Length: 456
Image (cartoon, rainbow, N blue to C red):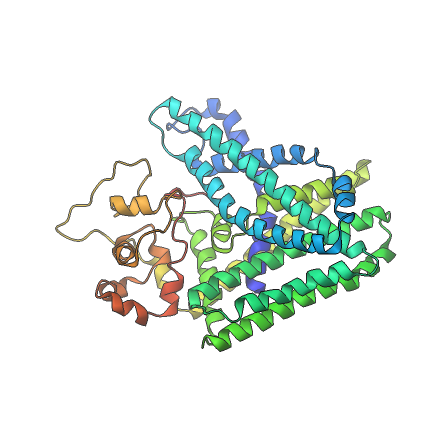
């Protein structure tokens, strides 16, 4: 859990620290392009196009959030009854999960449409509807998270704390809904990732609540100690519920506790493979795919709250803002270095490093490699079906019998499949799938990346 939370923190800090620098470098390249001349058909690299799109979406959604009145929303929610607010909060949690699942597909479609090679100039028009859909999604998701934060703020400021107690008891309802169900190791892995994302989102919501309350009390440090017990109580209840839930799930389903080390190694494998030169997706996108955590809406809301709560006036204030920005960059770099080092350690302990350095499997002798004519730029050794399966628009709707050959010969999934030495055993009968180790099964989840385009 701690490793996954720091992964989400790294992806979240990326939006505030490195993304503005990358957008600046991409715009600088675009402005100075006539000085260097066109060496290829592309004005910008695919990674730079995606950086500019992310930056433009953030700026547009930030200005759109100024039209949402936080104070009116707060008093509107405060006037509702306790039971109604409890129902609203549960509905918001479900909607947040649905938005996260659908939003990543929208962003992936935008990135692919913007970076795919186009034969005609008219084909560039297809980026416009995808871009507006992405802006609308980030704006609506940011409003949804704002309503969640406002409801939590109302619970903190209620006199008898009854709403806060009811919302904390909602965590214990998770135990009833999940403990007595049958779980496989892959299902438990997905639920663990969802818990990590939910816990990190709650931390950001608590930060927003503290900022809004401190602003109302003129940044009086004494009021922070009034909020501190409630914040600790919410965090402690979340941790206690997760511990009890996972303990009974592993007990009732005969799953050993060592499986969490395999989950951690799988997350570490995603991080290490995305740092390679032949990576097929950006690290933040792999975290979003694995955990369902999309940092853009949360970042828009946090920027909106911080800019409205903190007034910057004078040269000294701007100097403090610049120092704070450099501090965030230092924290991001330090966190990335520590995460990368620990990830390499976990990958070595799980004996997965061979999959990082093995060359892509070549096509079988005597069978000429087919050259697909689809728009996706294939990697070496990919067949037509495999390129289609790597598309972000396609979903893993194949049956288990059809997935087996793709796992053996796909080079774009070489980091997320089984080792080369076990390929001969996989192509046997389907009954042997039940005897495969859990590590191999874990790496088959979410194999669909951005069509072989590397997004640094």
